[in-house]
Length: 141
Image (cartoon, rainbow, N blue to C red; front, side, top):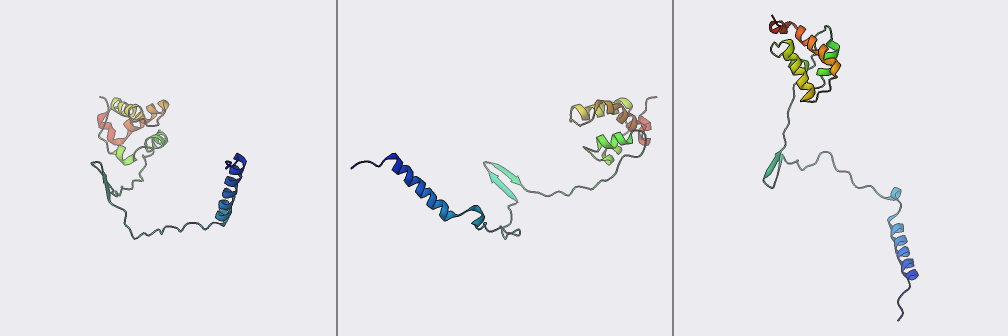
């Protein structure tokens, strides 16, 4: 018996593929899968453990703080730079610092914490922070 030719095998494969594609139909003719209900009767697990590690799910309500820095010279620079990372209330409740201490703090924010503060904005930020009423106690004698 003679083996089938390559052309006969290729024709058979093309024929089978055509039959399968015709039976499946075009993508527009297919019925979409049933949607998963938004309110599932199965609760999500509160923790997952594997290989000695446990990940627990938790919810934290963060306080809302919409305070801005008080008006004054360079307040716009401070509001534009500092509130990108933390609230005004957080900075305004710091203890009184000298100009050198504020400069060191702002420099640390830029270099250590990678705060997006332009180098030319540092003097304006330091001047603003040292001019705040609560900061007068730390001014150099």
